[in-house]
View 1 (tube, rainbow, N blue to C red):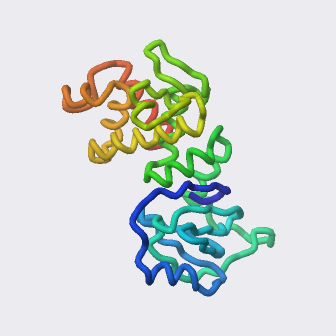
View 2 (cartoon, rainbow, N blue to C red):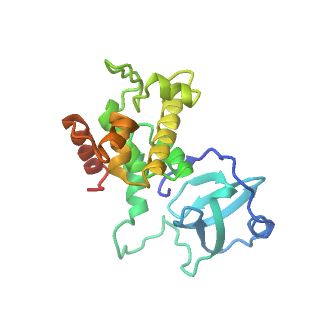
Length: 232
């Protein structure tokens, strides 16, 4: 993500090809660079530095992003030179989608945790933000009558599955919740409405009805989250 400072925890993956690691370690600083992420997205950054299996990207809009080199496919010089943000410049266009996402998350409680973990797991952070809003209204001590706990309302079985010792600790709760959401997205072929329905009503209910269950609560839940995330 861009537009604000965040630190992403490296996730164990296969190492990058040696040629790419050599490129990252020896690249000559350019006026600007294009970073190609393994997720298919790109970032335009001012510069980068490599420390072992981690890379720190200096953002053109200010701040830094530190992540695992496994999340980077390649880095190439940007033909558009870096412009000092303090210099007076006429802005020709509005903020990019990524900049807008970053601005929204900057104003969101636990925004940096949401952004970093979502990026690491390949999940839309605005989807996570909307889910937390609906589940707990960003109250880390929230608890439902059914026993769901914390920001992302983890059920006890989910907390155990992801080795969460304290489901009311924001970072641990968000990490487990995003991993669980990612597993549901993978299970249902990235169909957001089915993954969200399963998060609310359970995988069994979605599979039983071969779609979003005909429960008013679940249908309202899915609709509200997609609307808050700007995905409907």
